[in-house]
Image 1 (tube, rainbow, N blue to C red):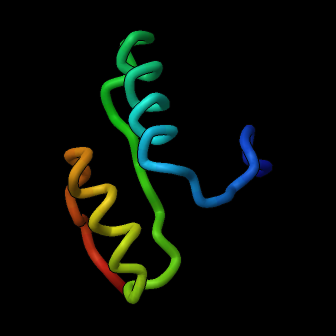
Image 2: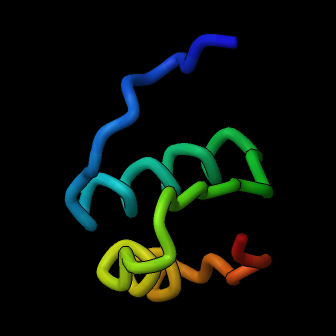
Length: 57
């Protein structure tokens, strides 16, 4: 399966804009996969945007 968008870090404002666009299209669920549990910055960024931690490997 190929990703419709390139996978790369994005600015918090870009992520917030993406969420706004999804909500405008009635997308109610989003999933973020953070590759490493040591990525505290990424985890924190997603938490501030109401993502919930679902688990860790």
